[in-house]
Amino acid sequence: MKMKHEDAIRLVECLLMNMKSLTAPESVAIYFDAMILASSQGIQEVIEIVVDTFPAAIHCHVTETNYNIFHIAVTNRCENVYNLLYRMGPQKNYFADIRDYSGNSLLHLCASLAPPHKLNLVSRAALQMQRELQWFKEIENFVPPYAREHENNAGKTPQQIFTEEHKELKKEGEKWMRNTANSRILAATLIAAVVFAAAITVPGGSGQDTGVPIWSKKTAFIIFAVSDAISLFTSTTSLLLFLSLLTWRCAEEDFLSLLPKRLSIGLLTLFLSITFMLFPLLVDVISMTYGPGTFGKKSDKPFF
Image (tube, rainbow, N blue to C red; front, side, top):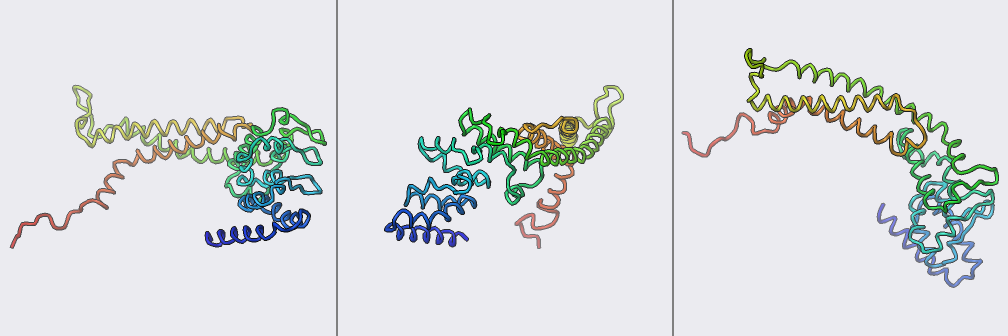
């Protein structure tokens, strides 16, 4: 695949070198479709080579809509092409403010829902919503401040378009987040109950006079106590985080950072609680399976 990619790039370079002798109208007729297709597919190498050979190609516009290659890249969520803007000089400000025939800026186009084939690259509705918000915030920081509240010919701001276009995705993301939290709450509750019961039931019992556990000086008991305490703390933390996800009133902005962070920490602490709950058992299993074993050569001294 890598060799095919490199061969394709060399072929493009060769074709463009042979096009240098053509007049402007002739060359535009050839590279125009290639530029538009490359920007919609995220093939930035083709765009770079074409622009290096024909600098005027950077101003390619689709006649029907007045879309340039960056409009197309943002609409199709092609970050490779969009990132070329950051490698440009002051001229990038021109592309940050240009609008199509419907009065849409880059931010208006980004506010529309991504194409299905791009949206489905990310699994789960909540993470798809997060990705869409990441794109919207990125373009919002790129365009001039006044463009953030600019209305298109239909009288809609970018934020209004984003809310309308992502209404169903937000509902699906909220539903998935709550279902995920529900299923993990059960696991966290069971783990918390088990490790709490283990904490108050001291192995070996306690001394009648002092109340100190009889095995308190033994290494195995210390390992048990520490791992049980960590498991209890992490399972309780996980439980509280998942409960907060159930009661949280999800807004669009929350999908960008707040909800994913809570879900990530909740899953991490749940994993840790399971690990420390099984810690002594895990050590025994690994030791017996991958340890030196019971049998085998123990000494080089001849026996018989």
